[in-house]
Amino acid sequence: MTIFFDLDGTLFETGPCVVSAARGLFAEYGLPSLAEPEILSGLGKPSLEFLRGLLPKGVAPEGVRGRFRELERATIQSQGRLFPGAREELQRLYERGDSLHICSNASPEYLQTVLKATKIEEFFAGVHSASEYASKGALLQSLLRPGEEALLIGDTRFDLEAAASCNLPFIAARYGYGSPEELAPACFFADCAEEISGCVEQARVFYAIASEIERKGAAIAGINGVDCSGKTSFAQKLARYLRARGQETLLVHGDDFHKPAAARSQGKNEVESYLQNAFDQKRLAREVLLPFKTEGCLHKELLCLDLSTDRFEKRVELIAGKGSVLLVEGVLLFREPLLPYFELKIFLKIGFDETLRRAALRDAPTMGEGILEKYRRRYIPAQMRYLSESAPENSADFVVDNEDFARPAILRGLRP
Image (cartoon, rainbow, N blue to C red):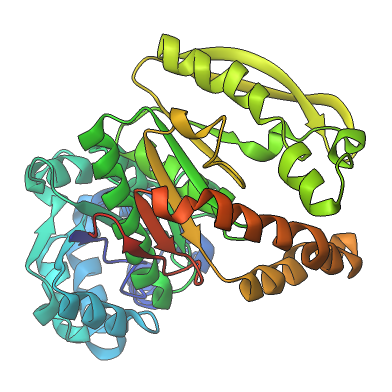
């Protein structure tokens, strides 16, 4: 995989050096000092734009940029540092064989100063400055090869916009200098530098799946697994990943097709009632999968069951244009009447001990400890029977070990 790194705020802890240099510059020119947040708010911009946002009116950034760079370089050389864990993450990715590149708005001289001061030059196959390009996106476009497996890691909306301009998946370094709001559309999120390689591992899995969707021309893909296997989160990430690559995607949740409580309780025992009556899968097939498969698009609003009120008052809008991929996630999917509709099948594998552990964390705080007994008595036995009778793992195109949300691994299927 080719991995493009922004430098400032992603690998290099820029703030202390920039604040020191800016305050030194303002002191030399007799300008009023600025608060640290004001200085850091402009990080990620080219140097002239950064200085223009800080300097009082009437002070031209071109006239002071040289001195600012001198102060900044001296500070970097004496006290520059990476974010904790950044070097170890680079080492891990480098040893795996990934091609690592710096892609930054900063000048070539600045980039070399930081890399030498932090002693990480050895990890990078290329160091690229956008200073002579119209934008970072234009730089990325010049570096990308057709069909290349690649992504960008950065910490500001400028990085996110650069990735989006190239249909490139983006990992948001939320520990950097961007706001959570501006980074919200990212595919993956690292809350500390130590999480970078985990996000990359997720991207590898989604790249393999996306490539197979494209190869097969699959329009409907199912994401299945037992309770608490991470289906919703996995499907949401896959949808964001596909959209980042320019693929229009609609995500449908199997849980929106629950039957009312009275219907869910019918059956000769709890296991049977769950297997046969928990979900209205015929409705899912009739109102969603069949129309999409027939027409190649979907535009409708459904009234689905609100589990909290047990009434059909939850409005679900389903809009997918021609050429879209429909993702459907849920339990009990890979069986009749739904199975024939799925052109690509993904099964998330975890053990039932992990199901209970996650249920204790997710459900028990709001539903009480009694919910765990319901898992043991109803949900798990029913899903064990589903695994035995329908063998969803055997029919899946991809089987993904999802015991660790942060580092899923493909057990069967096209490995990245």
